[in-house]
Amino acid sequence: MRDSVFHILAEAARTGERVALGIITGVKGSSPQKVGAKALFYSDGRIESTLGGGCLEAEVQQRAIRSLQTNECSKFDLVLDHDFGWDDGLICGGKVFGLILPNAQDKGERFWRELAERNAERTWAVTDDFSIVGIDDADSGSVFLYQEIIHPPCNLWIAGAGHIAQAVAPFAVQLDFKVSVFDDRPALANHRFFPEAVHISTEDWSKLATRPFPGKPTFGLIVTRGHRHDALVLRDWIQKPFAFVGMIGSARKARIIFDHFVEEKIATAEQIQRIACPVGIDIDSKTVAEIAVSIVAQLIEKRAGLR
Image 1 (cartoon, rainbow, N blue to C red):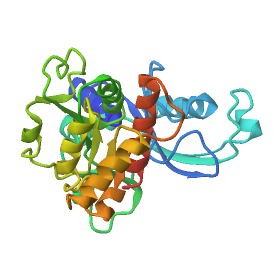
Image 2 (spheres, rainbow, N blue to C red):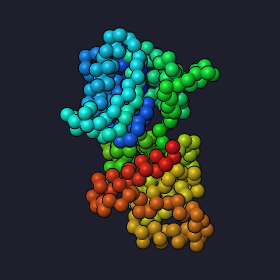
Image 3 (cartoon, rainbow, N blue to C red):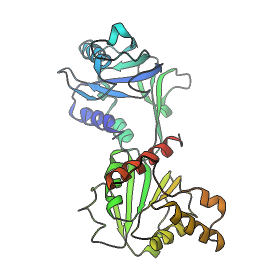
Image 4 (cartoon, rainbow, N blue to C red):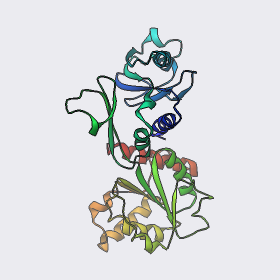
């Protein structure tokens, strides 16, 4: 999960365990990780999360352990060239900048817990004296070495609890979507088939239209047991401000449903253009698992386009 580092820092703050936080704050050229990548380093050699592995991470780990001994914050500036990375195969050719913040847990359990829970958009930063701050708490003249906006997770509403939904939902949970599944069949829509983190609603399809729509970005996936139910859900969802809606099916199915919607004035041609059917990127998928990969890949792509 994206917030795992913050969860671990909150727990370290609660228990008093000492840990150094490493952050990649800038890159030039090719690198194994992007800006914002984080890892936690312990004095006994443990590492949680990753800055990219290989010699880069090994070098930062040495510096982080030393920082825990001296309690001194530092910057790093590493060139990933032939000389630096040959032994580990890390010869990306780029340059990586970052920070090492020993005893980051000292910022406090509440601070890290609020970032981890992500109930609202928050911005945190590291100032030029290596202080960790919430952006609202920073002095007006502060200079930041690093700052990051923490967004609430995007919602994913899945209409249908069949094989495709059962494959997509756990994958999407791991990839930081807040997943809800809707179906009128309790035998399928239950936590025997879906992770506990998935919210499940078993109601008549007509009740779905009365559910309050979340304020944060929401994605929709329509994978019910047939064309009639797909069209019933789409009739409602096409009027809602989804960031993206995808529907399972063939191009022929899409054409039939879309033509009917336009002819009956259920939706405009512009609204129809926003619906992806068949949903998923084209990887010549055939199995349920392959279809799920293609769908989740498209969700990730669309989410990235929002930020």
